[in-house]
Length: 87
Image (tube, rainbow, N blue to C red):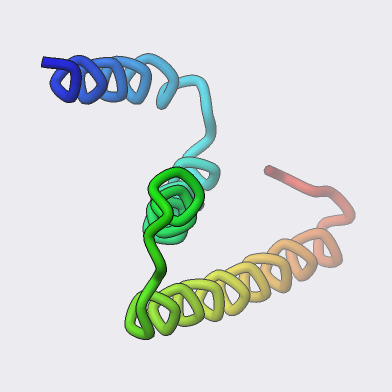
């Protein structure tokens, strides 16, 4: 069926490119996946997000901001200690 082909294609692309992208980019994409699902359901299917979905998206973005701030501070501390940046 058509849906089965889409799933197989998605899995194929996932396994092909996950080794070529760094882990932080993969993790970020996995975290924003619920937001993307709601966004594309609204854009393509015309579905209206409910209150619970909006609250979940806000919580996800707050978590991303907190996580990014911690990573940035840790990286800056490491740079200041060694005068180099290791990615």
